[in-house]
Length: 112
Image (tube, rainbow, N blue to C red; front, side, top):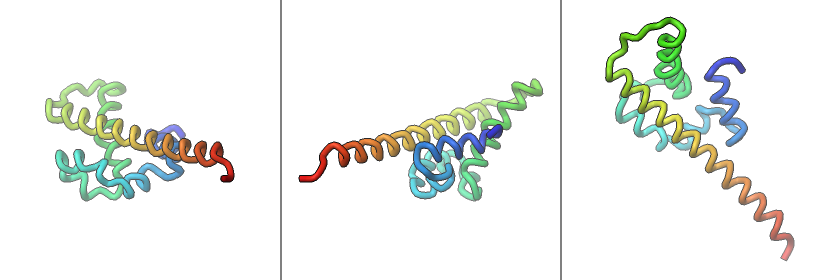
């Protein structure tokens, strides 16, 4: 679980029982901001891989190789994509919380 992509899937699996991309395929409204701002993201097979390529690979170029010649549009895209990932993780967390609350409610109500 060394790669960012594997970590996305691990967190998604823990919260939703699904891979990152599977979760997004069922909740595509979470990707509307990304698709609106970056139409090229509509054609990708894996939103997870798009996030990794466009955010984390660029971050690695800065941190590990000292590449600092990115422009403002690059920074805006990374910020928007990171914000979108944050919203996706919040939605996964909300789904997990709802599932736990439902399970608890069923267990505490007992037979009528």
